[in-house]
Amino acid sequence: MINIAIFASGTGTNFIALDQHIRENQMPIQIACLICDQPDAPVVKKAHELGIPVWTHRLKEFENKATYEQAILQELQKYDLELIVLAGYMKIITNVLLGAYPQAIVNIHPALLPSFPGRHGIEDAFEYGVKITGVTVHWIDGGIDTGPIIAQQAVPILADDDVDKLAQRIHRVEHDLYFDSLCQVLKQRKLIK
Ligand code: GAR
Image 1 (cartoon, helix red, strand yellow):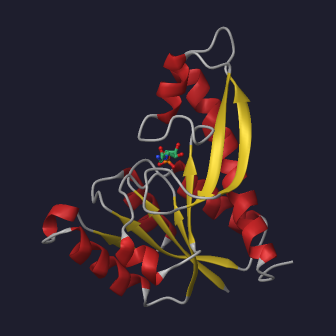
Image 2 (cartoon, rainbow, N blue to C red; image 1 turned 120 degrees about the horizontal axis):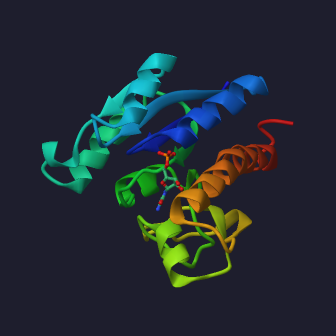
């Protein structure tokens, strides 16, 4: 089995979509654990329902970001992880985790990076008035939504769109593109066919 850890902070639709794709396609991939910085987030409940181990603590429970990430690292080291998959994890990853998992941490962002990074990629693109936005899957470095791009898919902004309609279409694209991109990475590493 190829073990992956998912990091999320909120609703968890990408988490659920990945779990569904893995099951439906009978992939030899196991979501070994969920790491969540918001114990009340819906994604935590979803992971419990699926029987996926959860580590959930707020940053403020720790002395600083480094000790927080060291605690996460201790949890992650229980599993032989191939990839760390950020799915709406709203914290910057620092050197503690980047150093422990080089070339192994992937993020998804709801815009065509390097445009509209940050927490509000969909809204920012809509308000700017671009005609095409989209979804980016990329390796992470220490920046906010920066790092080498793995895959992108464009999503047009239609004349009668509002932010909600656009967000729905973006999320639909995310849910397929993330799974496809992870498979692409694992194929390149010759871990799956
Ligand atoms: C997703 O749209 C993801 O691209 C975004 O958070 C959302 C999480 O939704 N991530 C970022 O904005 C990263 N800067 P989900 O909890 O339903 O998967």
